[in-house]
Image (tube, rainbow, N blue to C red):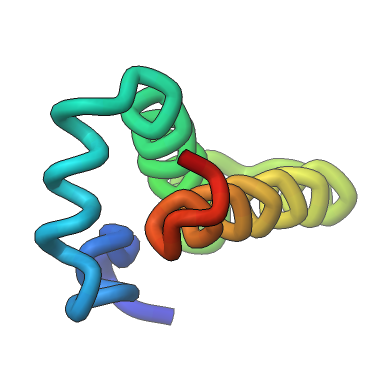
Length: 81
């Protein structure tokens, strides 16, 4: 576990330009990106025990983060927008 949560641009450095383009031109993508970012930070706070939650709640959040990441990746690849 790292000291800070990864940004999507860190996870997909080859997609940085596409991420920026979609964030500024596609409202749906921007909302997904913001939701992913907030969720990622929440999960990081849980993992570092700053904001403890039940294991079940943590797993639910991680599943939602994965769903968002899949949807974002589809958009980055051009399949979703």
